[in-house]
Image 1 (cartoon, helix red, strand yellow):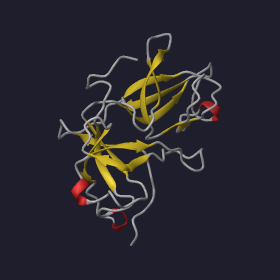
Image 2: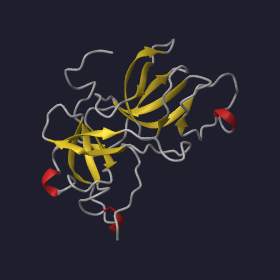
Image 3: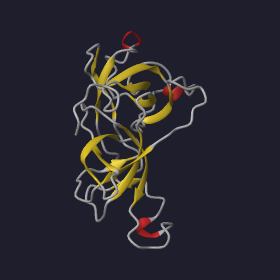
Length: 206
């Protein structure tokens, strides 16, 4: 059975520091002037902005950027309605459009010790057992259609190398049993950590 091509961005898997894993996230600000689209699983980096109460800003990262984490949830700003259930401010919001009519907040898995799952790209050449513990960068992509929930970001297999400055550290494959996601090759599903993390390395401030 062929490996399933179903990217989902960066999906929290577990922490490398705790057996009793509970995902913890941090709320970040996205200003209305931001022109990026955000999805569940989108890799993000810190941005030189904050809201009036000091909630730090983020923006979507490029494939080689140092990262602060990945989006796990979206919260639109309540602009005066009593409830956010239903309507344009509904709690079912799962993405942030590139063109925004208001500010947003996202919840980000930003623990430097967080382990994620991420799918490899369509090229099998470098997705082999001998490369299971190397580093790589990402191919940042939006889903199709653009209104879908999950990021289409994947491992950029052509960048897999021992280079210490690459922003993602591979940690082997996710131990799943489905035939559609077993073994190395195109669309392998990896465990990984952020290798160039904005809260854990010697990274310049934003």
